[in-house]
Length: 160
Image 1 (cartoon, rainbow, N blue to C red):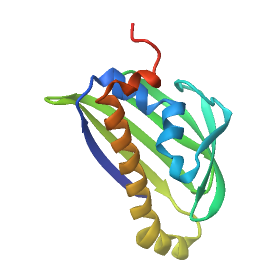
Image 2 (cartoon, rainbow, N blue to C red; image 1 turned 60 degrees about the horizontal axis):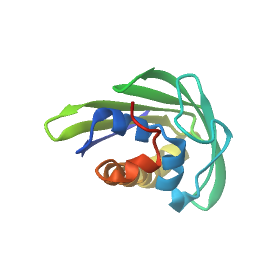
Image 3 (cartoon, rainbow, N blue to C red; image 1 turned 120 degrees about the vertical axis):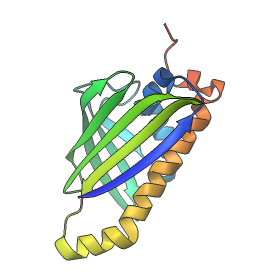
Image 4 (cartoon, one colour; image 1 turned 30 degrees about the vertical axis):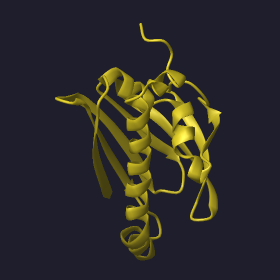
């Protein structure tokens, strides 16, 4: 099992960071580079516990689909998405949010297993793990930029 852990400090309230992280529309914006598109299940708005989404994207020149379900959620502190179907042997992604002196500490814990035994492990260590870490880091940087500006209002319903 491979684990990637990233921490991002965001100068914005936890609720905004949490909701931006589960916004289907923002996810599509942050992954324009790979053409990620929600094609089935929850395809816009904020994904909720027990909902699923099927993504289509191009990675390494190959068009692929990935279906994930939100299996756990405790707003605004935590949610987990788990792969139901896709290229990984298994995959889950924990999204954690906690107060920080400068706003919110957002932690990603991305766990996955690759198929194809030794060849998969070699591909993972040389190419896939650095690629996935960079993919998540770039996405988090965009979430931070949007959360720290008024642009978050483009992706979230009015705050109660």
